[in-house]
View 1 (cartoon, rainbow, N blue to C red):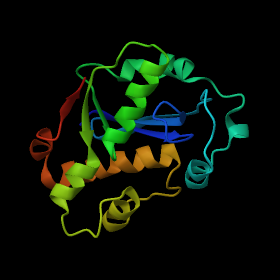
View 2 (cartoon, one colour):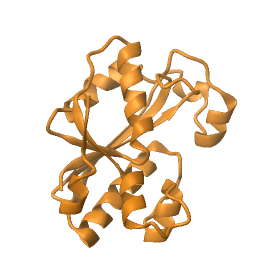
View 3 (spheres, helix red, strand yellow):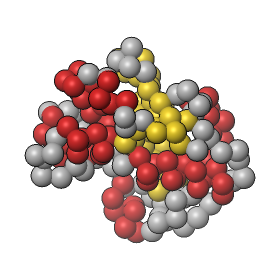
View 4 (cartoon, rainbow, N blue to C red):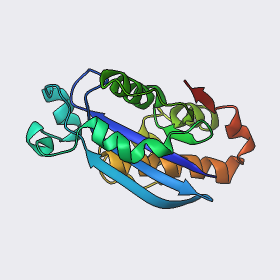
Length: 178
């Protein structure tokens, strides 16, 4: 399997307020690379978001802006590339809103939501939050809501599912993000 697992953290409730982004790159079913960056949003931080992820305004004071980060990661978002996330509507929405906010071209790529796959394959789990799924599958998740740890955990969930159920059942979960 080849894919990229993506995770955003946001400064507030606005989808374009990305304050960190992580990508975990998987080729031939192996994690081969990781990318992480803080992002300086052009919006205020909300205390509740800070409480969740621990990123403060001071932490991003010298961080690149979203357009600067996008220059480095845009090649991963192509029509024939699979980008996954745990609760993909959120992360895809952050990306879409950030691109719109900064007047950058829309990204077209394939997407898959590991919340949906975990609901399908593991209906007996008490819920399908990232930390719960990781605990149930014995997948390391050291710092929940750290984008890099979350993207790696998401990648490991999909790899677990592919190893236990095969890739064919996963194909019906792949959608075009347009």
